[in-house]
Image (cartoon, rainbow, N blue to C red):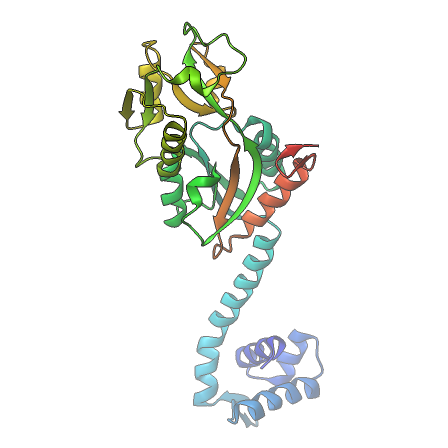
Length: 302
């Protein structure tokens, strides 16, 4: 049964006359009769009783007429929603950014242009810790996340795209003796007291820091806190230092200095989404991101 045949049947059932229905449909009466006959043959049942004064619906025809208009309407709505979703005119996109990540270089222009191009997409953004981002994308509260690559090592159901590499650095109070150096060696850190976020918030990050400590025979006094905001509270006392990155939002904090540390490997900053998330807004956002950041290749400036 074709879409046109459904419309022909509904109009014929409303008019109870092939002649009147054909006029409404801009068809000839024989052409409409042939289409209805084809439907009856396909369904192997009569839909109309032909009488001298017009048509009468059979019980089967009455059942079809009672249900088919709603089905047809739902079908047409589905087609329209599919079409508009694919061209990005409606929908929603939830993006999570790592709470300490400075996204201005790679995402500010992308987000502005995405909003301009797709005003019908309801864009939601939030900042969260590595743990929260990993949990919320699994719970389908987020469609896309921007986070440290190592935080997704145990999540094989993710599509992961590297944005760029980042370098490990040391964050120090501005008045710290090492704060004026251009680079810091690991040997210079053996007498420092560190403040670190609890491993429940950044398990892989903490593992890497512990690996660096052990490999370089560094056994520091360590203050463990619950979140990054607490790191800054202790940092302001001037007695602690902390590992961070060269892409942290704290670069703009006048109370601290961010200094590169020699001998530490680079890591990936990534954008990721679940493989089974078929939200079309994801591909539209990624297309916009790739277009705006083509000058970056493999995470590095060309």
